[in-house]
Length: 276
Ligand code: PDD
Image 1 (cartoon, rainbow, N blue to C red):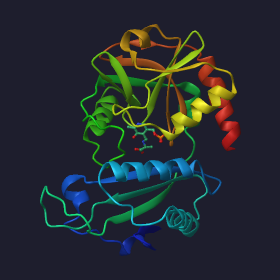
Image 2 (cartoon, rainbow, N blue to C red):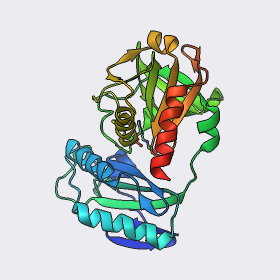
Image 3 (tube, rainbow, N blue to C red):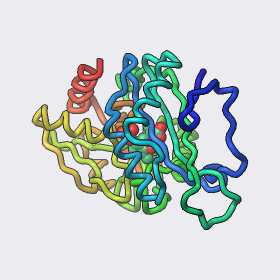
Image 4 (spheres, rainbow, N blue to C red):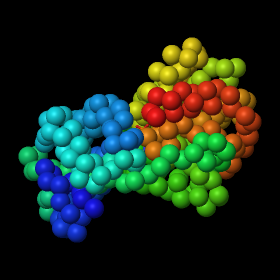
């Protein structure tokens, strides 16, 4: 398979990363994951805008124009013959001797790969169990940084409790999953954490809220609590890779269970029709 290394698309075996890459020493970099359906990038524009925004927030400069980025992503997908899956790409602050103090002006390092990945139909049909755990991350979760320790620990804890995803909460407020956004449905209204420094504003989240609008389903973007999650009629998670998955049960710091989830299924049906 082929990978992206700066402006080149090269065989994976030929790719090498420097020992002194700041991504390796400090997790000093950002990333994006974009879905590919039938060879086409889904919501590419939103992902590239968020990539740019994450870079700006970290005083990083994306070294290529949006058009160059698009053509690089296209070339990698074509070269690998990817039909359904995703493309991952990241940008680190580049190669510098290890020092907390970063220099400006060093060439950043862009890398990327593609992966074949189907739609998780079984999870979408059956729903998933999620593991509620305290959100121990830093206060800039709006930045899509490759530094994901809080997220990976939450994900491991979920798996260790036989749950497919984590559900993070800061005290009483539910923030998001380890790599998904979280929603509840109460009396046919969708409630989800608003865009803020406490969550990553999902591109899928935004798309789903747009679908809700088209379907005349009311939406409230505000923080919601553990108490509200327990009382909710439905819960679901969204991301680039899972699209929309209903939550079947919550375990961990608190417990809850959900039934048929009609609003979630209506949204998922609409989502699937749009991307097919
Ligand atoms: N994760 N919240 C977090 C913490 C995430 O890492 C992600 C995405 C999301 C959903 O964002 P989007 O809808 O734009 O994919 C929410 C990606 C898929 C990942 O890390 O693999």
